[in-house]
Length: 308
Image 1 (tube, one colour):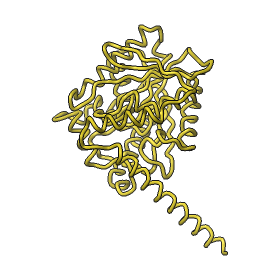
Image 2 (cartoon, helix red, strand yellow):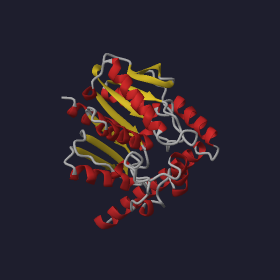
Image 3 (tube, one colour):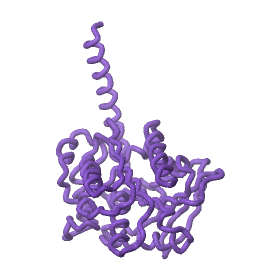
Image 4 (cartoon, one colour):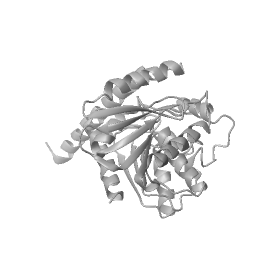
């Protein structure tokens, strides 16, 4: 077989595997997604309880200002000096600390650091700025707990990535010390949906579509100015921001949210890294795949670098 023909067959084989994988992810996501928001939330918690319950991790519940939260810690001798404050995703309407265990477990194990995840108030019952107010309460809790701002890495996925950025922008606005760094997984940075990937990736994204995003936007920021940096952090001023690491999937309609954020951070002279994973989808790190654990190791490498 000629070399050119062999390469063509390999490419076709990879495309076929990718097509099957995308269809599988669509089916799995379809089992979780539900127009009934309470059923959607319940399904997510079931997935988190099933996939995020690992013997190598200890989970300790805690109450913060009437908020349910939990410490996720590697069940071994580990680093106590630094802590990761984790903001869960879910479009600001769903998600929880339980669903986020599919990520916080991996993060605690890969970094050997304690991870604090919290249940902020959800929309539409509690629209903006409820989630941001709750994030500030958890930040203050950590400061009173004995951590300094430079001891904290803020991380988040999807809407949680939005919240991590919004919290940091709010701290900056108030003239407070900023966290040591940010780790953002498929962050939702632009609620105006202006990115090119909304069009270019709409046929391949197995998780998100415009109808879903529009529902989440309407729930979270009804009638509000979507270019407000605390709603769409992409429009924020990033001068003086801490080092930031971004991961995204090449097959997600929110890819532009990450790419545009990266460009703005570079323009503001922020130390920033980004990895885009080929054939991956929105917050692929949740899945029990080898690439997910490899991605978390990349997060750990970044965190170790900024904590030296």
